[in-house]
Length: 333
Ligand SMILES: NC(=O)c1ccc[n+]([C@@H]2O[C@H](COP(=O)([O-])OP(=O)(O)OC[C@H]3O[C@@H](n4cnc5c(N)ncnc54)[C@H](OP(=O)(O)O)[C@@H]3O)[C@@H](O)[C@H]2O)c1
Image 1 (tube, rainbow, N blue to C red):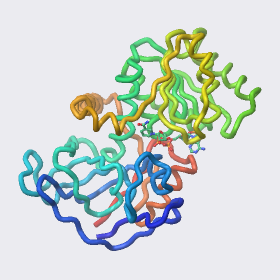
Image 2: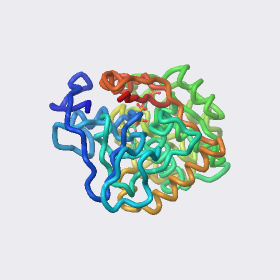
Image 3: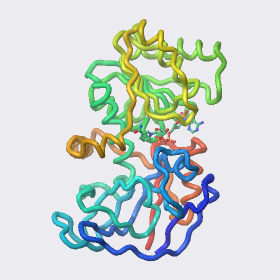
Image 4: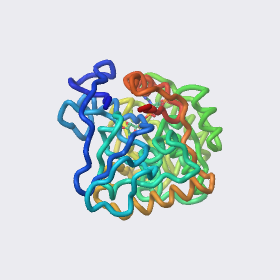
């Protein structure tokens, strides 16, 4: 079978497509014939050895896949050949066939395409865990989302609305803000796309305050970091919750005196680890997300599709800040 492989640390241009042996199912495993692979920012980090996990090389990136069960190993119950399923292996997904533990697969609802299914779990799983379990976002609260047109950001906008919050979307271009407004954001603003000096950060904080209203944001969803973090923290309300989700713009340092003045909690979000530590809570969140999908409250938006051979270009498009919602790689076998 074909596989996209990282053989040396580096950017997407270092990835190669090679023939490798087909996997066979061990006891308790299923083989998925992969149809679509969701691309996420961690794919850009893992191939450069900059992610929390460092798989042994050669490895294939690709954290989440959707496909059809092709074979089941000994002792597998509840999953059958021909089932349409999602799996989130973390890496290893940019291949034609993939072996995963049977108990980790999630059935795909009939109405959901493989492309949507491959674009659902990491972003909505992360953002739902962040907003519901970590921030305990309540109806009527104001949520400020940074990077609101990216994968996890767009999911946070939709989920924030589904949870009854007033959502303010911030992003680097007019198209991205428009996209977030189409997802349901109540209000949006464009922020500068490059590094900011103190004066520019102060001006941005003023814009965040204007957009969030007199008292500021109850919850900030920060999947961007860098120079955007300080202005967002300064635009928070009393008892605010600041969600630390990701750092594509760099790892910021926050002035802790601001958290004291507004009684703000800074809350770390590590969804992958939370899933492993509490699989039951994860399963419950997944069931709730599937219900929200069935009710039409959330829908992954796939803005670009690439074939497996061009998976490197897909990852490059994401790291070049081009994605509106999700980028997906499809696999023809
Ligand atoms: N904590 C967790 O459990 C968890 C889980 C999944 C992902 N993440 C993290 O969340 C972040 C977003 O992931 P994603 O998959 O949603 O990525 P994505 O779709 O690429 O979105 C990232 C957004 O960051 C913004 N950005 C600002 N500066 C950037 C830069 N220099 N380069 C690239 N993007 C920049 C872009 O929006 P603008 O152009 O509008 O600024 C972009 O839309 C990543 O850091 C990822 O590692 C964390």
